[in-house]
Image (cartoon, rainbow, N blue to C red):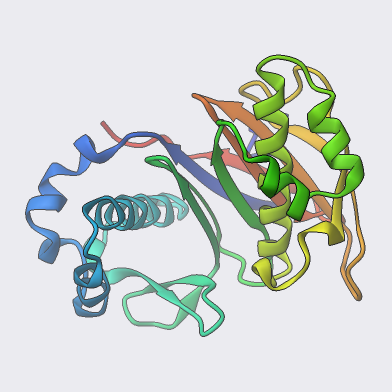
Length: 249
């Protein structure tokens, strides 16, 4: 649906990988060869091994995503493609210390990483990744609207967990796109309906309504893949193509 890179003048490149630590053994053993001093300082602050690995994998994926988003692909050292954070916590990319480049959104869950990058800095969007698992009734009661709660509770079988995680993920992607994160009440966006079987390994549209002052028109896309749900919130008034970057073996 959105995979043809020649149909659109504006592109968002994206990458998704699950349980990917085995692909980065060389980086794990020699992080100094892949990260600059600022990134290494951030990496070494992590104490919990799982969080440390999560950080390393997500950064390496972003570096490959960014390099592959140019034509021809960048051949710079990974140390020259760096991921920084604004004071708000929003990540961004620098290339060879030349300042901010493009727009980046990043999410990870249960060993999986989902990232998207556009070379156009003004093209804001947000992504989120959730492992499809049981969600607590308390989370649904606290963060979902009454209508969303009814959607989840009226679902059957495995759709219960899928719908709960899809709704939560869509909220996260939208709030990232408008650069608010969880500063806003998650009930300011309401998912209206989920079409059966839509989003299975292809991008589907998600119907929603949002009550955010001054908010532009947005579109939320989703797909289900390898036990995860991926959501992407993009401007609704632009013709945007999505191109998947395949991770090198």
